[in-house]
Length: 254
Ligand code: A2P
Image (cartoon, rainbow, N blue to C red; front, side, top):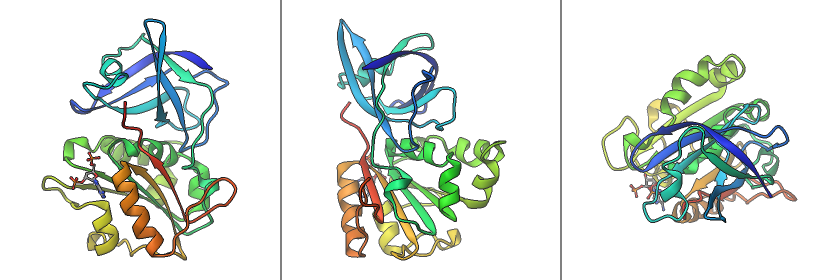
C-alpha cells in the first residue's frame, strides 16, 4: 500500500544526482537508516523502487537522494519531477541500517559511496545515535568532488541547527573522499581502512573493541569492505542478533 504525496522541492546536484522532498503523511513513521518503496504511477502501472529516507525522523517532509539513469525505468522519469507533482510512498519502511542492530561501541563509522550517503543523512540527525556513540564518523566516497552532495549542509547548516547542532559540533566527523580528481582527502574507502585515514584527521584505525560500522554502497564496495571487516573479526548484525556492522545495498538499479 502507498500514500500519494506531493513533491515540495527538487535539487539537482549534477547531471547524475538529485534530491527531492515530498509531503509526509502523519502516519508514516520510520527509524533513521530505513528505506521504503517509492515511485510513480505510469499509465496505470505502479513503478516502485527502494529509497532510503535522507530526512530526519522528526522532519515534516520526506527527502530522497537519487541517481539519474537515462535508461532506468523509474529514474528516467523521476529526474523530471517538479514541485506539485505526485509521488507514491510505500507505507512500510524497513531495513537493516539501524542502530538497534549494532552492539554498543564508542565510535560509529558510516561508510557510504555515491547515493549510499542517503540513509546516513537521516542517521546523523538522530539524537539517539549521538547518545549511543561518543563519535560518529561519516565517510562519503565519490569519484568526483561535484558528487559530494550535502557537503555544505553537513559542514555549515547542520552544526548551526537549533535542535541537533551541538551534538553535531561535538561528535560528528565528516570525511569526504574522492577517487578520480585531486581533493583534500583522496582514495577509496577500502584503502582508507587498510592504509589509514589522512593523519590530519586524527582518526585511529578501526578497532573491533571500540568501533561499529554501517555500510551503504554498490555491491562491489560492500563485498570488499565486508571482507576487510570479517578479516578483523567484525560480525554482521541483524534485528535478532546485534553485531559489529550492518550493510545495505545502495539501491542503484533504478
Ligand atoms: P573508483 O573511482 O576508484 O572506482 P561508483 O560511482 O562506481 O559507485 O563509485 C563511487 C565511489 O566508490 C568511487 O569513489 C569508487 O572508486 C568507489 N568504489 C567503487 N567500487 C569500490 C570498491 N569495490 N571498493 C571501494 N570503493 C569502491
